[in-house]
Length: 383
Image 1 (cartoon, helix red, strand yellow):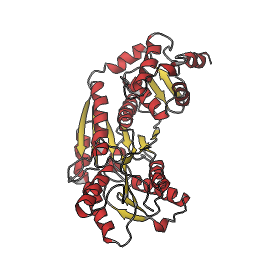
Image 2: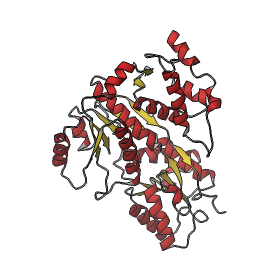
Image 3: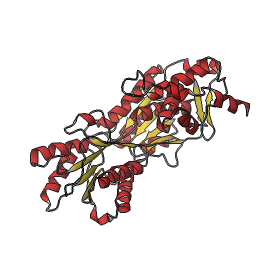
């Protein structure tokens, strides 16, 4: 109990010290991380002390839980704290921290992806990989990239295993080969964007149902009733989850599922282009379209410009998903569902390092909440 009281007193009234707005020198999570680091370095938090819960920290600083997770991941990457599943986050003993941060050799961590398109990695996964790479390099370790595109599954699995990795971050459907086979080898692992059901691997997933719900809820709030969904492959769980959330939002607005047009696509710009060509060919086109990623939405914007005189958002509103780097640079800037890619990349590395250090550690699932970012590609439906 004494430790718990000490952590609650640490950093009292710090919310007033956070600098907000476009002129701030640091992101909010960096400011929170710096304040907690100061408590540790100045002895207000001692080795073994438990940090307040994420809810308590969020309330204390007036921020959301995703920002708290980023701050904790930042401290963990610096070797100052560690997290125990179902218990909490604790301050590391400095002596132990030095041992962990000075290994005999750098770790070899694999980025193992099955979601490339003709050898090209999509922008969303590129940004995720960039964040993981930065976290790995900050720890003095090495990232090795493996892409399965165009390689036979047995050859790909053999190639990954022969690399003698210390651990791997898997990107792609975890229940499909070759990821399923590689997870069964016992290699310390983290899966991104899918849960490793029945395997000893941590998982970091986005609440895609919530993201799909937010996208359609936004279109409905603008008066759109003629809706379309341009999805990814139906075999992928991320597709099914986003679709479930979107259809639930439509149902809550009194729009039956059979009234929502569903066009299965492939998460590529050409897929979005083709979907628009299909919409333009039908007699009654939708007024609001939710594309299941920004790359398809960008292809759609190009198709509308090339193939029609329709204007966005005057004639048709478009919502994307992921909020990749250039989503704000399209014409018009894209309304989209923002995913905390920096948080996911850094957290994947931290959880993987914990799994490498403790093979008996109980795997955990981290769910990252999305949020809608409204820009100029959506507007009220014309009466």
